[in-house]
Image (tube, rainbow, N blue to C red; front, top):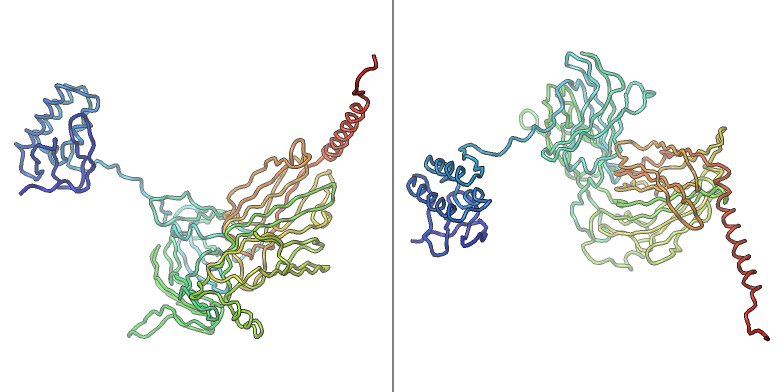
Length: 572
C-alpha cells in the first residue's frame, strides 16, 4: 500500500528536484515525482546512508552555493541523526567548502532570557483592597502596609497587572497614607515583556526603606472598558445589568500576611456574586451589607501572585459612557484678549445593545414619567466662569437642543444629543466656547506669561465618563518661546509631550503649539490643571500687525502705480 504524502510540508522547486521542506515528525518524502517514497522511521541506517550518498554524487556534479541548505531541507531530520549520515555530511562540507552544521539530538533553539520578576524584598503586612463599581469605570484602591524583609535598604515596589489590564489601566497614583504632604510617588511601567502575561508598574519610594522598616502606601488606579453587559441585549425599557470579574485576593508581587477585599456596587441590587465556602461547606464570604460585599479578612501568609477568580453582577441602569477619542484645542490670542476652546468627542455607549429596533413612540411616552433608562439623554458641561458664545454641532450640522447659563462662579452648558444613545451606539459631536484671556492668563513680574486651564472639561455625569485617548493642543501667540509645561495628570497616563510650530492665517513664523497626549483617564481628573509658562516680546506681538499693514500699504501702492500707467494708442 503506498504511503501517504507528507501532511503540512511546502513544495519548492530547485532545479529538477522537487523538494519537500520539513513538516511534522514521521513524514514521507521524495526526490522526484516518479521516484519511490522513503519512509523515515527509525532503524533504516542503510537506507539513510544510501539516500545521502546519492545526493552527495548529485551535488558533486552540479555544486551550488546553498548545497548545505539543500541537504538539510531535503533530508529528514531523523536521518541526520545516524552516524553514517554525520560522516557523509562532514565529507560533503569538505568538498563543497560549505559550513554544514553537525546534527545534534538536543534542541538547537536558544534559551530565552528569563522574564522580569521583582526581587522578593518586601512583604505585605496588612492589605485592604477596595473596588468601587459606582461609576461606569472601575476604581481600585489598595491600602497596604509594606515591610522590607531584605538586609539592604529598598526603594522600588512593584504592582502586577495582566497584559489585558495593562492596556486598560490608567490614572495610577501612589501616596503615603500617613503623610499626605509627601505628594504622589513616581510610578512608571516596567518595560513591557511580550513573553510574559504579567506586567509591572514600578513605584519609587521617596526615601529608601531600611531593613525591617514599614511604610503605608495608598495605590489608586482605574480600569476602563471593565464591564460586560449581562445579558448582552435588552429591550428598550428593561433594566441593565453589568458584570465585573476580579480576584478576591489582591494581585501582589510579594507575599501577604493579612488582607480583605471590599466591593462597592451602585445599589443593593446585586443578584449574583461569587460565594466562598468556609468550614463545613457553609458560606463564609462575602458578607453583604447593603451595596457592599466584603471578602475576608484572610489571615495567614498568602504567596506572591495568588489569585482567586470572582465575579459580581449588579444593576446599572445608567449610560456606560466611553469617549474613545477627545481632541481639545485651546487658542490663545493676545491681541484679541480671548481664549477659544473647541472639543471634538467620539462617544460610544458600551452598555447592553437593544434586542429589538428602537421605538420612537415608546421613547416619547416614557419621557412623561421619566423612568430609569440606560440610554444617554443629556450631558452637562460645567465651564469656567466668564465663558461665552457656546456652540454645539455634530456630523450633520448645528444642534439646537442645548441650553447655556452663565453665573459668577461657573457657566453651565446642557446638551441633548440629536437622538438618545443606547448601548452599542456612537455619537460624535463638537462643542466650543470663548472666554476672556484675563480669566486664565497672567503676566509675570519678569514680563512673561502664565496660562492656567483645566486639562479636561468634559461632561460631568453622575454615572461618570471615561476617556480612552486625549489629545490637547494649545496654540500660543506667534513667537512665544521658553515654553514650560506642568500638569496634575499622573505621569503614568501621559504618553507624549511636544512643542512644535503651527502655521495658520497671516502667520510668518508660525504659532508655537504645545501638544500633550494622554490615555485612560476618567472624569475625576477634571480638576487637574494644565499650566504653561512662556515668553513673548513686544516685537513678536507687533510682527503680525506690521506685516498686515505693510502688505496692505504695498497693495495700495501697487494699485496706485498701475493706475498711473497710461494704456492706449499714441496720437503720433
